[in-house]
Image 1 (spheres, one colour):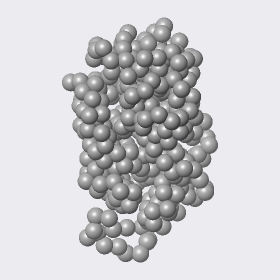
Image 2: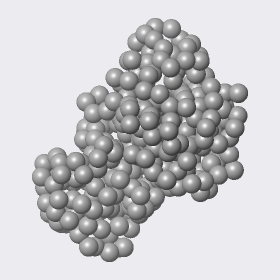
Image 3: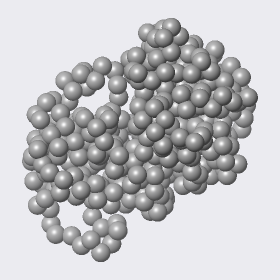
Image 4: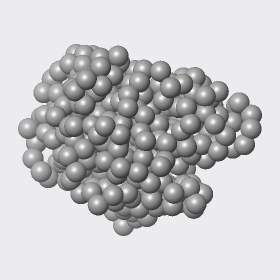
Length: 342
């Protein structure tokens, strides 16, 4: 029986715990920052704050203590918000046993360093000496509510280590949760992070009352600029045509459960970002943070990302959404003959 620790009891962390717990072949321990989440799961088997209405199997236990959750863990699933990843792994480093497999399921970039989550994790764990950590990335179109409900879902796990990828594929897969493997860690991680930025743009379009034409254009051109950055960072263009690219992009730009899209809708309706964030009651829209990091990464790599740049101006510089759309629509004429054209 596998011992699995899930670090982060938000909606996605809870959803993954349900997937792993329902297999019956795992002992799953879930770490929650919030004590009320621990009480809710322990007493009622439901995470009423972040994933209401979804019963958590009894094979999943929950704790607020990292040492308790990590003891004996063979696989650690990292599902905390991106901006807490480094600090939490600093605390976790002395508690992890050698050879532990780390699955990063956080879709974001670290502000400041511009690093992907597997890079942050590897940097922290290698800083403690010893062997290089075994780290992979899990991504794809997967709303937590639907995953927890048992809707058929397909995701991908990316690792340069074929054995690690196959192990995670086997341990996570069940008849409702299909896991593919991929060796393009860069593309899978960047796809999962960057699509959140485009989803905010799609939400803004909806909030402004624009139609399907506008959203289709944002998805298509958003995919083009995501692909440019992925290739510039040595990822593969074909990854962006898969689950972690186009699949997740379409879901997050069109689905009603998308937090990033919801942020965009409120911005399009004229609300200010601080008020929107306050109204989320502790839930995180990763695209808010990723936008800044993506702009910085694009500048470092010399890549033009007009939609991302306009989202940054709206989110962090107070630009009016209609002004941003006008600038996008009145840019100089371009050719679409190249998949990577700007």
